[in-house]
Image 1 (cartoon, helix red, strand yellow):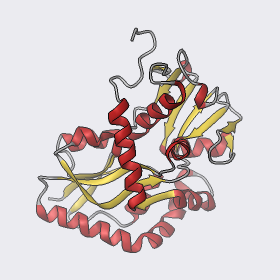
Image 2 (spheres, helix red, strand yellow):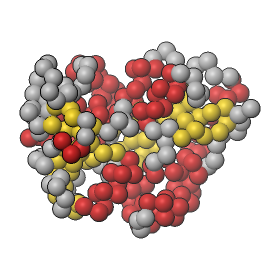
Image 3 (cartoon, rainbow, N blue to C red):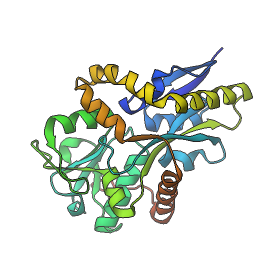
Image 4 (spheres, rainbow, N blue to C red):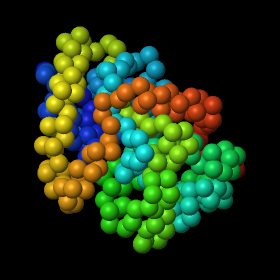
Length: 276
């Protein structure tokens, strides 16, 4: 028997996958939001879990060292496409939110609240066709921005050639607001996982830390082929991702969780057609 470990199938996790599964473990493909449920239901023993889902796992998991997925001044793959700039997207504007995310949806909630006020947030709709703004993450976001948009300085929205005239990198907007990186996911393990599994996971991540540069380089060609983009684009993308986190990343995570504790509500965005 081997232990199941959730693995996000996005390109930003390719260097982790390049190392292969930890000893005595096997990977189970999980989108970010699904990994929270999988841990809560004991279907996996570990995951690079979205920071936005940590509260739901309080008391059930413990960190696996300073490893995860973070970005400082841009992410290139957590993007808000809109017909107007983000700071003009208040009620009664309508937005569509990917169901794949935990951290990114909460990050967008905070950024829109800063810009428009938390009592004037846009309304959520069920389909992108009904919306004036759309949150897209992961490989889909990365490929769309390469096809449709041209970059501007990091703190300004990019211009797009499609119906979405603007695209905002949420990590850039967070950095502009707080001058801190944004941590999207952290590696955690279930507290009641067998000790041999915990030890294997810790050794695996330590091995990753020692080999990170080589693993990143080795994963570029396969990732570029899978995405249908150039190796240079993938190399540039991998350079903006932070996998071994430092004190400043922890400060960014702490600020995010503090801001959520101050402003969080349920639901984050009122569904269109319903009264507050």
